Length: 148
Image 1 (cartoon, rainbow, N blue to C red):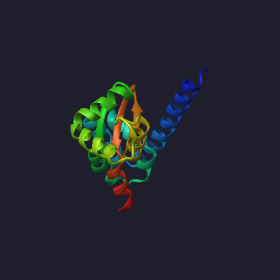
Image 2 (cartoon, one colour; image 1 turned 30 degrees about the vertical axis):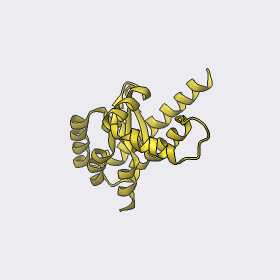
Image 3 (spheres, helix red, strand yellow; image 1 turned 90 degrees about the horizontal axis):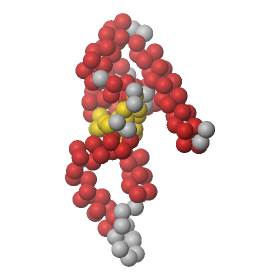
Image 4 (tube, rainbow, N blue to C red; image 1 turned 45 degrees about the vertical axis):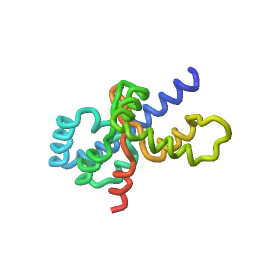
């Protein structure tokens, strides 16, 4: 098995364990179980992907729906499609990113730095997978809820 496949298998296993732990944490109380069912009917598999985020397990049950709504950004059939959806929903990113690079000391021609873009993305967003789909969530609402 190649390294990429093995890493993906470990990530999926870790995501599944995290999701089961989150659901077990919240689903033990009948009212919460009904609310989880309602959230699934309303948001679909996106809520499942959200529950897989390790940070979400630290939220109170009452915070889940509001934080999910604030944090949900994009989805796609895989990482590339989800990123495309995110960029389309946030068209205004191009200007700030170009401004960011204009302020970075770059010799010669102005070029996009994929590594720097990934670092900005990783600092502000998180991806989660569920049933073959990739979902992107903004970290700021999750972090703000955890600070409360």
